[in-house]
Amino acid sequence: MQGKIIKGISNFYYVASGDSVYECKAKGVFRKDRQKPLVGDNVELEVLDSEKKIGNIVALSERKSRLIRPAVANVDQALVIFAIQKPRPNFNLLDRFLIMMEQQGLPCIVCFNKADLDHDGTGEQYAGIYEKCGYRTVVVSASEQKGIEILKELLYHKTTTVAGPSGVGKSSLINELMSEAVMETGKLSAKIERGKHTTRHTQLMAFEKDSYILDTPGFSSLELFDLTKEELAGAYPEFAAYEEGCKFRGCSHISEPVCGVKQAVERGEIARLRYDNYCLLYQELKNKKKY
Image 1 (cartoon, rainbow, N blue to C red):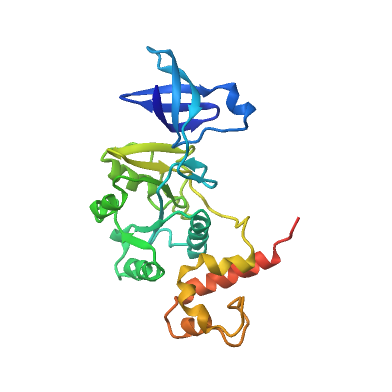
Image 2: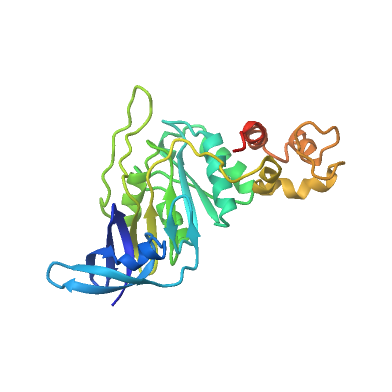
């Protein structure tokens, strides 16, 4: 029987097949071959108990993609959600996530939620910064259901991994996309403006035919483990058009006297916010100890 892993908790995998969901374990052959089933995997399963919906995963189908962070398979794109207000966006964290997706070759949609709290158009300004970098952006309000249909259109017929820090309304937004309260929502702490982690495991949910959302646990920090400082500029797509103006080959865009990227920043053609984050991340990678 064929199915798709929609949730994994500890050593149990929940496999959707037809109208049923089976609780499965992976056969020992996977451990022997050092294979680990992932949420999003298409699998072959054997049914052990049809009434109790219990089975075993006996084979994995070939993956069209695999993400390391988050660990999921067969994903088409990523959706990263930040709030416009309460809490205000941490752009350094947002850029880290985009770099991670660039490293894994995954297109990314940037979503700014809580437009109902945005009284001065700040959300559109934020969206404009990332739209100019080549990312698809959308401004929404989960509480007022604004922009939900636009967002749905971007997700149709794709498997999308959804991520965002705590407190940005990620669970509420997914509830709107699913048209039902499928996720527990947490209350934002008024004192420190951080939400509790309401997502504890990776789960795939179908909201239309062939349209899936992979919700992943909230994140508060992302380390750029497998990136060198020399590779960092390649993860900023807006830099490419200006690098021919750099005098030195392999320009770091930091301290060189003639730099097309720095000139573009001064002219306002590259967002200062993005460039400042680039400088911070470059220094972090430069200082990283090699073991």
